[in-house]
Amino acid sequence: MYSCQISKRISRQADSPFVSRGLRGRLLLVFLLVLIPQSARPTGSDRAPIVEALGWVRNAPADAVQYDYVMTARVRLLFFWAGKDDVGGGFIRRGFSKNDPRQELLQVLFGSDPAKAPKAINRWGAGTEVVRHREVPSTPAKGDDVVSSAFFGFMKSSTGKSVSEMQQELKNEKDHGEHQFTGILSRVDAGHAISLTVPLASEIDYNLHQYAEAEPVMLEKLSSSERPARVLENPAGCMRAGEFLGTVSELLDSALQNHGGPRSLCYVYDAQVNTLTIEHTASLPKLAVRVKTAKGAMLADRTYEELLETDFVTVNHATGRRVNFTILVGTKGDQRSVPVQIRYQPNWWFQVVLNLLPKPVAQSQPPH
Image (cartoon, rainbow, N blue to C red; front, side, top):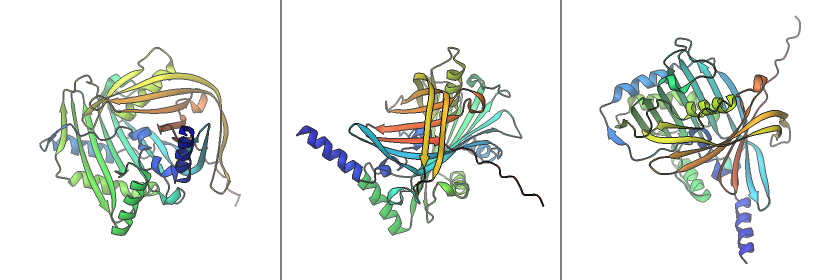
């Protein structure tokens, strides 16, 4: 009887729009995996650091290297996984400021594509992190020379804790013509952190392809907001000036160097202390990746060699909340340090996989 109940439960999960629950913003969990906590001290007297950090974000370099990804959503059916390719995607960008080579940019954007996801689910999130180094960083950069950092996050809001609740949210948004988004600006200096979170009600239901249009709207909302910021002074257990994306990058670089460097680092996000740890690493000789469009065309068909598989966990010190994710990164040639696959599994039966898309081949121009 117990086995029958499990089978019925899995059947209901498989028949539901299973990608919707995972794509309602949880993916921002792979790289915005630090959900907004509620316990920092509010204050309205510390606007200058926020304004300065917004300037850093607005002046982010435009010529960053970009890696594009396609999303697969998978559900476990007892003994095997079943999934659907090409339900969304996103990118990772990395570069340095032309005006100040000490200023590093890390940016991610991931989410569902309402034109492809079941029930036209539109859930996505983006994060831009500016890391300010004391000196022009070496390759790989060292985290101990980071003097300050700023994180700008922008996501399609969702408070639903189930598929049905989220579908009701979407229906309410459509009925009222008002779509809910959330923005955050978080800044960290050694011994001091400040963050500002604001809601945005928009007539336009921005999707991940409209981020360039939506970003300045949210930046202006943060700039003009009179909401009190949250401040954390002398955070216990973490005097680093780094935030989440830079900390992921530093730990990956350390794992690739294999020189006994740190496998765990603290970081501060939204004025709360967290710890990011590489729990396990393994060399992966080969990884075959085949991803198709909904119509069956091949999007990615490649076998990678000599990858490093890294299992991460981030823990919020105040709440104890743990979030796990895995990054498979190249170790050789032009794939070195490039994440070729990212996996996020919020529960035992659902998983999101992001696979690196091949770069478009430049077409030669016919002679005139």
